[in-house]
Amino acid sequence: MTQHVPIRSVFGHRPRLLDLFSCAGGAAMGYHRAGFEVTGVDIADRPNYPFTFVRADALDHLAALITSGDIARYAAVHASPPCQAGCALTVGTNASRGWGRTHVQLIPDLRALLDATGLPYVIEQPNGKAPVRADLRLCGEMFGLGVLRHRVFELGGGWSVPQPEHRPHRGYVRGYRHGVYRDGPYVAAYGAGGGKATVPEMQTAMGITWTDVREELTEAIPPAYTERIGSAFLTRVAEVAA
Image 1 (spheres, one colour):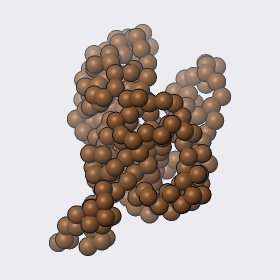
Image 2 (cartoon, one colour; image 1 turned 90 degrees about the horizontal axis):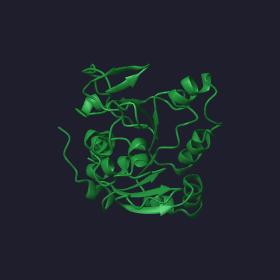
Image 3 (spheres, one colour; image 1 turned 135 degrees about the vertical axis):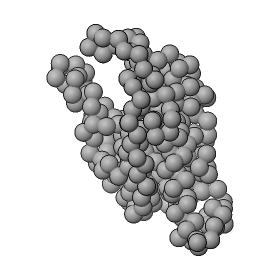
Image 4 (tube, helix red, strand yellow; image 1 turned 90 degrees about the vertical axis):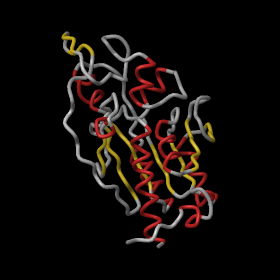
């Protein structure tokens, strides 16, 4: 049996994680619960972010950390870049109907910078055509949540997370679709109207209590996802150190 090694004895402190494109901190809270000290970076002001926060362009900030050598303060990096350039809605329904606008795909430049850090990293995206490897797929049903919120995660830097079984969905996402209303055990934590979730319903369904801003909730991922990822990473670090 592998001897348990306290994480603090491996790093000398609570390991630090850089949370890029942080929004209001759904991913950050999961990493915090797993055992990380988290610093968030977002181009918009995020007064509800529950940890240390830097308002900056994420790519510029990451490049500056690499140039200065300050990136060495971190044990890992998480990034949730804007998804509109590759999400299923943008490249599917919206594009077919001529809706929306052109979106810049940041992932190639982001990945190049993340590789330059030499650190383990995570790139999170919704299901769709974003240019990321689906090294891990998570769904709210895996955690007994009130949202489905399928997400894929590219894990860079030579590490992995065991893939949980994708449990069958228990029913519909509540709301209207193609003019037909269906009830179900999940709420639609995006948009407004048409039976979409209220702010309190989104908070409950995703386990996010520190923000009541609809836009922040609709963009967030449930903390349960990154708590699973962060715990797996720290367990692996401890096993290697032992």
